[in-house]
Length: 443
Ligand code: SF4
View 1 (cartoon, helix red, strand yellow):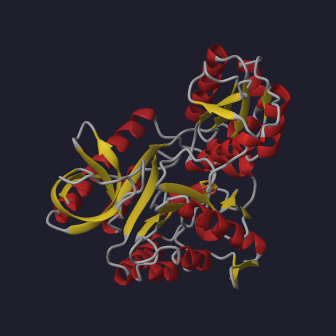
View 2 (view 1 turned 30 degrees about the horizontal axis):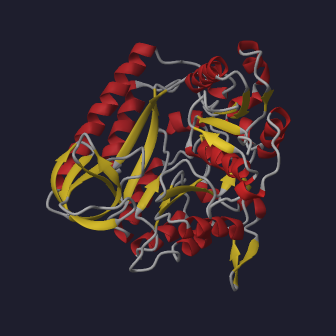
View 3 (view 1 turned 180 degrees about the vertical axis):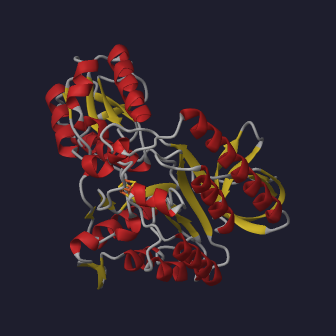
């Protein structure tokens, strides 16, 4: 039998780009292509790029160059694909360039440059498709694009306006993932709480009922997947603090979905938020967070912030530090402002000196570290539920995550146990020690 054609894939960027890569892989495998984890084992390489920040563009261009040097046959897709001229100027040997979500175009390019003979014996795809995440968790993308126009962001110009998937398509995918062994669903999009606005919350048939494409309705249905003896964790990312998030916090208090909200606040000072073109009433945001915590005391809030945005004064920066303390932001990521090409914020006055940006970043991280330390100490002695991600050789313990920890971005709970703990097992542990975002516990 002749060797089937083999494709390698390099996936860069955010979880949304990762989902795109998974879809491409799923389609290729369903057509009988093989996958290779190395350049030399592949007949052709697909590079899924990121174009969010200038640093991400540079990383994408480097990855394309490496794939050409190591393999030679390269197809480029993803966010940077919008800038074909830039890619071709740096790498004229690239075979084809396609933009984000152009799965059909990627497949056509692979067919054209690496045709394959049909073989029904290899045309088998496991339930849930092929994924790049471990078997026990998966990203669930509910929409593409974004209706917001934050001044530092070029995503809407790359990915277009909000385009929500039908509720039954999302639920069908979630069901397939759960059947394939997934224990944790990570709901993602550019603006999760805006889900369905573009399709006027259209209903679609799911099982014996109609389900609206609406944030609350979708969360409620996703919360039905687990059972007491075999829970499924549902975690929400990229949520805006709109009033209708309140009802979803009610589902968290009922234990239907994880008490975790990833809300990219970006800043707290009204004038900076205005310049960023983000909602700018922080008093109302603080009241809303307090109300959420009253409904669901175990709620964890993760957020990301930008320091050194054009026009940010020392006073604005202190307002930001006060906010993360007062709002008790549990997980705070910080980015230094980047002057992204094509972003309207480039034209704003009063850009902050890089030394000042660096200094504010360091001060932010100091406050953040202190808050994390205090939070960790408060966890000692508590019994918590964790999900196991596998054995960690360095720590000589099982690396697990609590409900407050999303994979890759939050903390780890190291669990010592005499018994083997399988990946994806959800178990109760007792916290014994804390250091930064890391906890140590015993089973
Ligand atoms: S919400 Fe703002 S930062 Fe996020 S994708 Fe939309 S425009 Fe960009």
